[in-house]
Image (cartoon, rainbow, N blue to C red; front, side, top):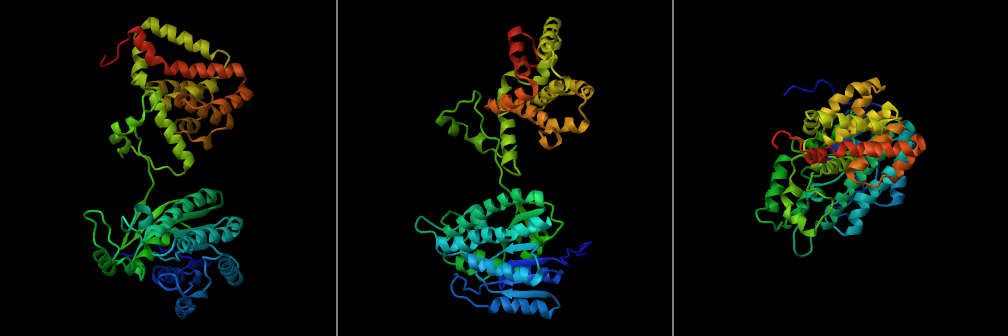
Length: 467
């Protein structure tokens, strides 16, 4: 197989790798050093169950790096304790002046809840907090935390005590921390992702005898032997290195890496069942359970804000269900001359005295959310005449508030909230301050006007295709 066109290099970068004395952590440290990074090799030297300490594993890896011409120091501090984190960070800053890359790999997979949480979750929290100010100051950071398939999908046995329960819980918590740090780090070019590695290490053997009671689940011995034959730690390191590099294109993501394979793990949500009238009886859920679980049309939000916007767009469909296809209804109304004249007169009265740009923002956003292609197309020219640019029109359609000014962001939010049946008081107050209360009343009536076209069609007996 031909080699890559270019090689990830880390010349001038400083990386801290925890749990780097053995297994996957050792492979991370060796690969980073080979690619030019100065590496702080941290490892407590504990046994596979977390007991005992030894500086030997960290020293051996650091020596191996130096013998190969690389730059490394060893550190045997416990990152499960605040004092150990302080010593590790002080050692790294004292030797190299900064830290650009943090890979928190240390951990063990069977043990008591407090001990498991200390090394997997609290250590990740303390390490990132300790290194964060320096990364913000330099406007650069790459952080890789370690989750696990156990936390992502569940692992262990039952119905009695589950030896993997604490580990699975901690590894799921790491996902939440990763995503929160990604949101926090975006303005400062601090990229935070999580790796779910598959590799044959000494911890894998601890799964022997823990039998998954799900019918058809593979026996642990078979999984262990597959890992032994197919999952060297170096392949996990090779697949995860991009997350540590300056060119990493994503943040807040999870990647399953190992056996020469890299795949993204994502948290998504189905469109679900949406009650037609906004009310929900408990029995409705199971009656519509296929819709609740249907993954077609599902969404993978980048953060909670994106999730909220998507849910509002789903709910907005309900507000327009009575109108059926709004584009078709618009066209049908125009085939009835008397209705069309009355329609235009009503719209004109609703918009009298309003700024044209404001009106077009509201109409375009309503058309975008309700899928009214006819209305959208017929208002592009008036929107441009009112001063809206192509980029602003595209932003209105996508709900991309970053490309709009504050008043237009409020207008988009007002339309979305009205269509979703949400509380508009805060937006209404802000718009009243900017535009005046009478204008806000007119805009609310305009939104209602476009939303009621379907009911008007029915009341007036205007026929559409299929009726």
